[in-house]
Structure formats: C-alpha cells, structure tokens
Image 1 (cartoon, rainbow, N blue to C red):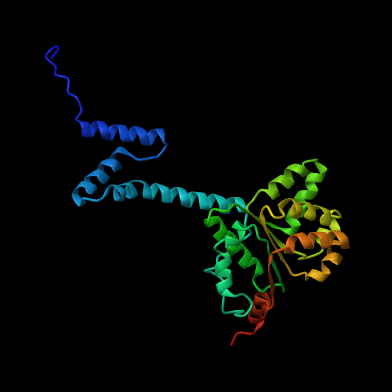
Image 2 (cartoon, rainbow, N blue to C red):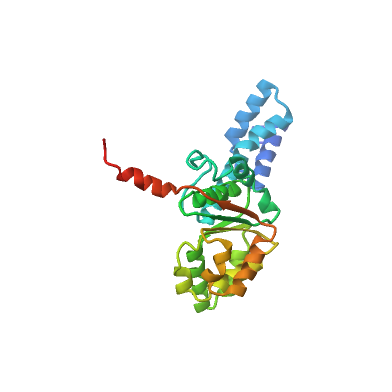
Length: 269
C-alpha cells in the first residue's frame, strides 16, 4: 500500500478476455468488447462447447465477409443485367434448356476443370439471361468472372491498339477464371468497325486455352464463323481452340421477346 491506495490486479479471467480482444485487433477481426461479453455470458448459461462458442463468435463476421466478397466479384464481372436462375421462365421454352444440366453448370465445376462453354442458338430464347445467371452463381462459388459483349470487348481491344496497351488488355482478359463473351455475331458492327476482330479474338482465346474457362454465346452457327470473321483459316483456328473439349449447347426455341411483342400488339378485350 502506498499513499493509502491499494493497487488491484485484474483477475485471470479479465486478463484472458483482454488478451483475446487484443488478438482480435491484431488479426483485424472486428469483435467488440460488449459483443464478446454477451457471448461469454450466454455460453456460460447454456453450457455450449468450445466449437459452438467459436462458431457464434466468428460466424456472423465470416458470413458478412463472404457476402461482401460475392458482391464485389459480381460488381467486377460487369454483368449487363441482374439475371438469376430463380428468375428464369423455365416453362416458356421447356425443351430449350435442360434445367438439370443448367443447375449442374451452376456449380461451376466445369470452370474448375478449365472447360469452355459454347451456346449457339436463335435470338430471344434466353441465352443471355442464362449465361449471366450462371455467371452470378460462379461468383457466389468464389470464381472471378468477366462478362463482356463481343462488340464491347472488341471496342476495348481496338482502342488498346491505338494507345499501345494491347498486351496489358490481353493479360486482363486472360486472367479471370471465367470469361463470358456474349452476343457474338449479334450484328456485323464488330466486323465493319474492327477489321482486326478475328486476330484480336484469337489472341484472347489462345491466351486462355487450357488455362482458364471461356464461354461464348452466339446466334452464328459454326459453319458461318469464317464468313462472319472474314478470315476463314483464322476463324477455324479460333473455333478449334474454343470448342476443343468444350460443352456445346445448340439451342432452339421461340423468341421470348417476339412473343411478348405479339401479345402486346393484340387489342384489349
């Protein structure tokens, strides 16, 4: 005792609690002291196991981090629309998409195997909806996805030719776990505005070949790719690398957009 004051030493339990809070801070795990105290009190009353306590303590923060990571991957993928498998109208073209097969693709296992996916089919049957929905599921499974329309991709690569950044752009498109190229052949603007289209697309596919998974969605059947890209031999080399070992879906069905427009044009009763 000094100057009439007694120095009190914290009890071991308090010291251990404070050390744990210090550990959380060092590891950048945001656990507030009040939250820890509340969980400790509940755990003592309920007699929960050590693992159960840890799950309660870290579970909500881990879940929050996972949700933020998925949201970040979806944002970085740059999907054109918010499309989901749950929002897909399976009854409109019941024979166009095999739901069991789509749910299997939604697991992302083909991305892990570095397998390509090619969707060839008529306009308006839901290819773009489906590929973006699969892309969102892939983001949820932890894959880095990049979604581009063919015209946007070629416009970006053409611009990189002008400012001499093509190697950097090619590396960017070579890196995602899954690159989705939508609307290939949707119109001929890519071919007319970008004479180097075949060469640029080939560079991307060649850079990703057997290293990453690529998806291409198109309404141009394989035998017409040479005409579309205006370079027959290069188009065949492009096609060979893309379809080698790929999952190929040839889709037919009625156009949802055309059907919607027909219904809207009918006079009201």
